Image 1 (tube, one colour):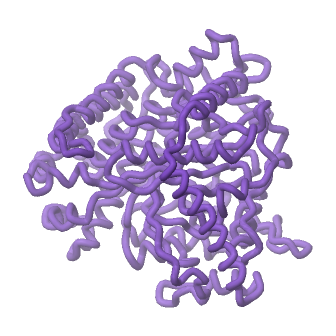
Image 2 (image 1 turned 180 degrees about the horizontal axis):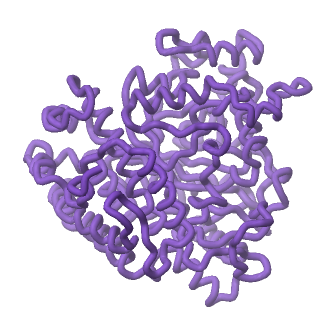
Length: 569
């Protein structure tokens, strides 16, 4: 990689391109959406053992309220919308609806889980009796067997971003001029550009935990490794003094598929990416063979391969596409290209009732657009090591004075690099502000630039970051992590209980709950083979051979969510 390519400044021709009157409005019309994970807990702050409330609908088929690894780990999914305010309004209403149906339980305020007694206290998510439901649960049992259940209940916010199709029609010739891939079609241009965005989001991935990390401390009950070198905050809390996001560090979100498996996804192109994941789900792994697959009649994992399915690869950012019924996500990408990009490294902000706020959403949209427009050479093995190391350094020590990161032209202080990147975003933020408007069509100026300025302040003043604020408040109140997070959980619950859900929105959610239960019943009634046959047919699909499983919901209307897909698992 040349030093010229290391500059943080956007290429002048790219800025000129998005300044064009035909293109400039389109950069503010992209779709954004959220998938917010939140753990249901008891009043004393422990993981709930109660089943997913039926009043919330079916976790298998509901487009907006589902579960992740555990029955207690809710996932609230917004529609993909062009107005971030509307996205947050929808997420707020989902919280209000959930609180109406969980009795005296609470929604935990942060990413790192509450006081736990070990993996046996964490119930796997259940989705009914259908083959599709059994597959989801067996997959989760496999995750628990491979990585431990405790790690699987860490919560996060996934930020999904895409640009309108009209944008790609307008910029096709400009992007194609780079000749970085086969871009003879608009679809090829879009895929190549989005993969470039993915690579740049990895190169600059350390920016997200530094600015928005909110998990610098954890409850001792969470840490299973007796050799962990975390410091003691008090007798019940462990931390690193300058940590930003333990969720994104060695003890948290990142599982370790690379250790002993030989897996590393290839982001050189969409083709390389899908092929590397396809290899992983087709290739047996001696590391997982001792777990068994079907043991005493129960599926302990879907297979003993490097990955059970593609979703198991927990990268910080993913290219995504809508999936058809039981379609491999990689095959959806190969057949229809990239629909949107999912940024997965965002912590749940304990200080915000929704876990994320409007200013942050504006900045993340700017950040992802910046990463799209910047040059993005392929990542060499050496740079891959730097990317991984920089991410862990930022997660464990991001606020440490003088912390150095590594890039091709040598070491650079995190804050110096961050200031370069944020300053380079200023012209793009001004362009986005120039076309911003409210729902009534009135001009609104400066919101994106203001969001950028707020992040520049945090880059200059580490004590203004959420992670620093967490530790400062814990010290001021004399609270350990569990006490602190529990107090904020109660505060947010009180805030929600003071609000009223709009009757029309309440009626919508009630109807969706009923319809989702009906769809689950359809799926269960539609099974025409046993589970072993179902799995064999699922894994037999190829790019040229569609999955040999009839959809029981063929007549059901598609629902576009923030994830813009709801994959079967």
